[in-house]
Length: 191
Image (cartoon, rainbow, N blue to C red; front, side):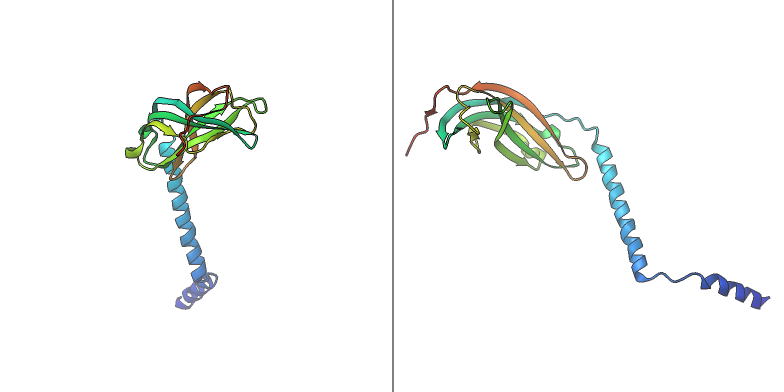
């Protein structure tokens, strides 16, 4: 009887090979990756219904510092006012918001022109309240041709959600319109 049992166990275990270190390491690594992906999906699902919408009290052109022609292109330098609270856009999955002001206008050459004139990165909800008065644009409003004079521009505040995990998406609010001067001007003081 004992010989028969011993022969049976030999046949049974001779077909099973010992796993190498590489096979075991592969199993551990892919188990860890499966856990990480599962947690990322759960994070995304937990924030998919977040509907926090910021309030934009004021976004308007304050004045035109200059509107001039430079190398056959119109360049406008503006000042603007911006009062907004972007804290409601945050949830626990948001790493940061990329906030920017876009000037939109129509021209003869392009049906829609969009130019970023100011931007900011906001990493914390505590820093999400923006109060700017008479702020000069960071980037001049530059047209591809000479179509800025007597053009109506619309300012739009856009915020890009950058989550820790999940989808990237942008939201925006159109605000005021402003008509640029019909002649080239410059009220910048020279020193």
